[in-house]
Length: 124
Image (tube, rainbow, N blue to C red):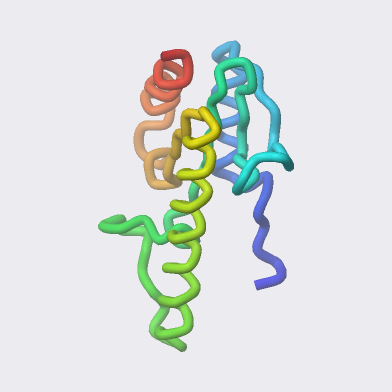
């Protein structure tokens, strides 16, 4: 698991390139915010997380399955990730930030359409 990247993942790079191409400017992995959001729009007070479906346990997603080997440990780990994500989002919202999440699976089929929707959400 040491080889698993937490930053600059393929889905994150797709989102960053797409939003930059649409004229949005942002900061990356803001160290002072809970959960270190992947993209931060400080002037709009928007924090954007790009979640991988497996690591963040995206329920009812075809890309999320608990591995059969050591299933209890994996279930505990992935549910712990979900709980941590939820705590971080609550803290961010209490500090006046809008929190947006885009899932890896949303970027697989209709990337451009989803990025356009994301721009609307960020600017709202």
